[in-house]
Image 1: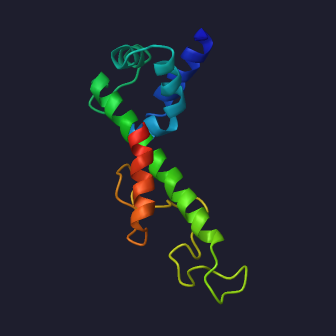
Image 2: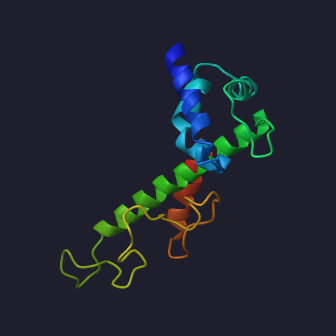
Length: 156
């Protein structure tokens, strides 16, 4: 792996841990740097090595301690699960948006009073997906759609 990519990746990670000296959620920072961590793992680095390199780069918890390999691994795992749920939710909603109920003209809303009406473009797609916890998707998902999400999660 390119040494400059390593330096810039770790510097970016450390810089993301706080804004104006206020700590940012570690899970949020890992979410933002998931691709960098994936590259490091693909290059053969173990979580212990990545944790040590983060500490050497200046990454510290709000209490001044270093992030352990287990903290990093668990946060990365949660990030991957959130991404898989988010992708599955987007695909499921896209698929359902293409289905027109009988008697409805093309272009009309599939669910007239859906919770998505008026939703901000960057708002979370499912409860908890972007909030640091992984809650099950809304109750309006069918068993088949939930099985698709579970299948994607088991592939990782």
